[in-house]
Length: 191
Image 1: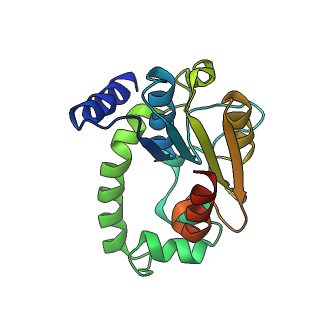
Image 2: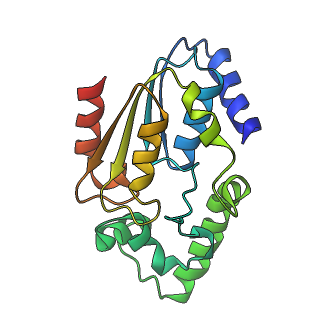
């Protein structure tokens, strides 16, 4: 995780981005929070969309790496049918063997990197660094998130001093895809 975080900070430096707004979702949110905690004077504003990175024993996070394709829409979206259409580019039959083969290959590629960073438990010590974040921070969570429960939003809010938590009704973990207008409004209102 540290290597990825430092790489992104190096890219930011090479691009001569000065005190940018940094936005990240899920694993990207964990990386964004790491960036803001490590280079806390370099990030002016931070937006975390249902970030990974914490572990609460009383609220374990679902192991997405152990799930089958047909289980993912309900984990990622409040509206599982709409999520299925988004995940399958229009609603392909997740039980079709040809679809399943293609999905498993694509999913292995997508989750391969995430698995290296998040498996088995998405706790890489971020909780001990969140207090270092000085950026004005917006935390956005889908109120119906079953992958990473909204109580994690409360934990991020408590740990980051200049933060605001917005929970969006009718949205799951993929809050930005499920309720893009509400997410954009929350960002515009905060920043």
